Length: 230
Ligand SMILES: [Zn+2]
Image (cartoon, rainbow, N blue to C red; front, side, top):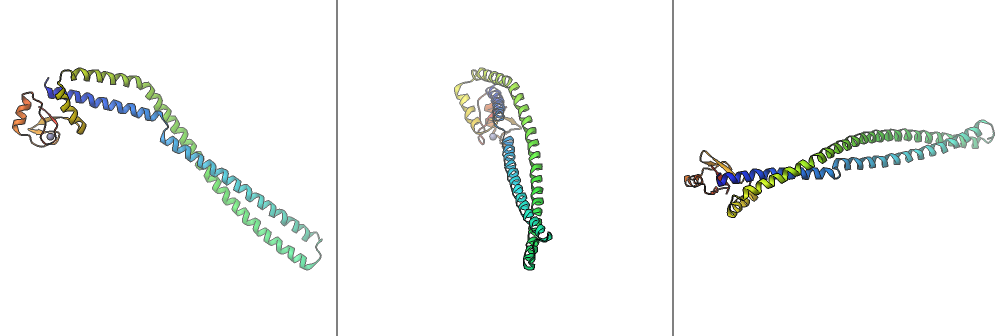
């Protein structure tokens, strides 16, 4: 095999190794807390807090309404059982009764509005709980698949590494260094020459370079520095 062909084979292995390492890393990320699960848990906690808040606000409204209704009843009783004799007193109590009835009605309307808000919160909470359960199941399935795949992945990585080491032995250190240097900056580091142009940067190559590459010399494109493969 020509030097450029060997380097192209090394590059293919390096790219495979990177893809496998990325898969491993992604599996590692999935093993940690899932961002969607975390977000849904936060929303659930927020809605639970809102619900508790709304329930105690409703309770407060109910207590106030009950208290005012009790006062209204005692005025009613006094007005209708004939125990109030003085006309001014009677008038005062009637006025008070009207005021209390108005307040009770306003409180009852507030209660209805509060109950509607509470229902909305409960519905949202149910939805979030469903979404969370679904996502948690999905995450668990992905993790199970990752655990199953992990040994295979590790095995393939080590076989790619062994194959690369074997290929690298057939090259000289300067040849390998040229490849490493280019690969650190651009992929692919080895570019095929097609129709007299470098397939990496698509610029035409001087025929002198093509001649040298034909003689199995390690030749790089003068424009993009990629190793030329004929
Ligand atoms: Zn080029």
